[in-house]
Amino acid sequence: MNDADYDRCKIVTTERIVASILVTSWVACAFVIGGISLAVRAGLLFMLPLAFIWLPDLFAKIATLDVDLESQISPKTSPFMIRLVAWLIIIGVPASWFVFRTALEP
Image (cartoon, rainbow, N blue to C red; front, side, top):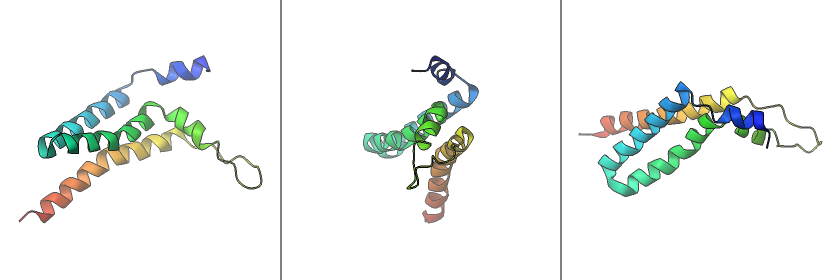
C-alpha cells in the first residue's frame, strides 16, 4: 500500500465530519419514522456515498481501471466529481423524500 495515499485518506476534514453527521441524522430520522427496518435500509443506502466522501481517491483509482476494447485506459475520474455525486445523494434523497411526502399528505 502506498503510504502517501493512505495518510491522505485518513485525514479528518470538515467535509467528512459534516457528511458523517448528516448521514447519522438521516438514519436517526429513519429510525424515528419507520423503526429499525427503515433505519437499516437508510444506513445501507448512505454507506456508499459516505465512502465516496471519505475515500474519493480510492474510488477514482477504481474507476480508472476500466479498459475499453482497444486497450486504451480511460481518462482519470476526478475525486471532486465523486464527492459531488456523493453530496447530491446525501442531500438529494432526503430532500426529495421530504418534498414528495409533504406534497402527498392530505
